[in-house]
Structure formats: C-alpha cells, structure tokens
Image 1 (cartoon, rainbow, N blue to C red):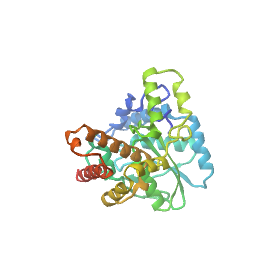
Image 2 (cartoon, rainbow, N blue to C red):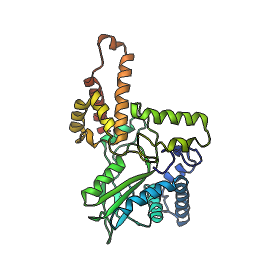
Image 3 (spheres, rainbow, N blue to C red):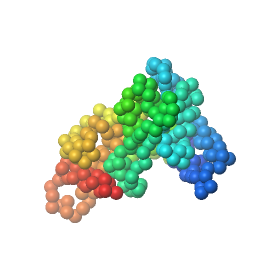
Image 4 (cartoon, one colour):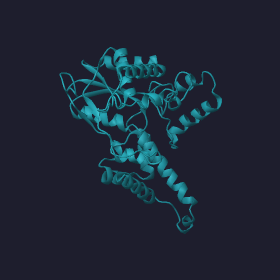
Length: 316
C-alpha cells in the first residue's frame, strides 16, 4: 500500500476522513451531462489526492518488480462502464502510476455492477455472496486483456480484497500475467486473531498519542510480518492454520456448497473477518440464557450461523 501504515496519509489523517474523498467518490453526471469544466476540476482534485498518499519507496519497489517482467506492461484499475462516474479515483491512481513508472495504462476492461444494495451492517456477507466480475469491451488494438502481457492492478482502497482478487482472476483467465497489485490506502482491519493484534494495538496507540514520527517508526516494521507497505492479498498460512483450528472442515464445505470455492480462495482480509465472526458468535452465545442449557459452543454451531448469514446475503 502507498499510504503510511495502510490507512493514514503523510499528514497523519485517516483516509476515510479525508475532506476531499466524498467529493471525488460522489461525482455524478447531471441531466445535462458532464460539463468539461466540472470533469477537469474533479480529475485535478483526484490527482492531487493521489499524490498526498503516494510513497516514493513503494514506487521504487514496484519499479523493481516491473524491471523483472518483459514488455508490454499495463496498469489497470476496476473501472465501471459508467466512468467517469464509476471509480474515478481508482482510474486516476492507475493513470498516475502509469505516468510515474513510464508504462501504459490498460483500457477496455470493466467491472460489472453488483446486484445487491449495500448495507454497512451486512456489507461483508453481501460482498462475499456477490463476487466482483469483470468483462472486456475491447474497441481497438491494445484494449482488453492482451495474452502474454504483464499487468499491475491498482485500486484506491483495500477493504476485503475481493475486487483485486476478481480482477486478478480475470487477467489470468484471459492469458495475462499479474506482476502485482497495489492500493492507495487500506481500511483498518477489525480482526482480533493473533497475527493482527499488534497492528491494531499500534494503531490505537497512534490514535491516542498523535506523536510526531510515530508512523515512520511503526510503518517500517510492516504488517503481518510483511515488508513495509505490503499486505498479503491471498490468505496467509497463519490464517489458514487458525481457521483449521476453529472450523476448517465445516467452513470449507459451507463455502464450496454456498459460494462455489474453498478456503484457499479467500483473501487474507476475508479470512481475518471470518475469524472475527467466529469469535463473536462464541461470545454472543455465552451471553444468551439458552447457553446454560448447552455445555459448549461447537464448530458446527459457528458454521451453521455463518451459512445462514451467507444464504440471507445471497437473497439480498
């Protein structure tokens, strides 16, 4: 990720609280169409926003990666067919990266709109039950996924990683090769499992102290044992093991039956959230009066609750 410690910019402000974020993301076309003046202003605002989060050392790391690949190299982002109304910040970030790295920007690749109405309380399950899909709408030479070409996938923010994973799958399915994925910032994980406790604890310390230089001292340590600025997209071995100790077999069967994929296809953020869900189910069970009638909360109980929530989300 380019933002220091995932979700904070160089001034110590949270990505989600950036005063320009909503103005960029809520840009819409009016009845008279998009005025050139307004579009230029919003693009300029998005570009200045991107540069507030870029870190030179991360750009250098990506440049080292692309040197190892053969030409051509493209930067792509999850742009919706309604662009510039769809994902203007992600596209601007991709364009800035392409310019800074002196590579091309991919075109003709679009994200299909999701069918659910987002509810923040149910957001994770709705995302999981409705995976992101992509399609090519090539209109000229060099558009769409080019077999044998190398790609860098760029998005504005990492939440659960489903969008990045979906675009990664689309690229490889049609013969492209993904050199890496990068985001401008990352929403703070709310997982409670062991690998993430240090991350959350240090973030809370920052929120309390606002100490100058704190970001640099903690950012250099990296997250989940990764190098600075790196967060794993695919599920890590540690998360797999923790899922194994809690509900691996039942969860694997549930995911396969309800969603058509296994535990190994989860992103790291999705795995963290599932671990948190299972922890919360157990806590909630212990607080209920009926828990006195039952000796313990089993793996099957947790998977049954999880399955029920997936089924509800699929019908949303």
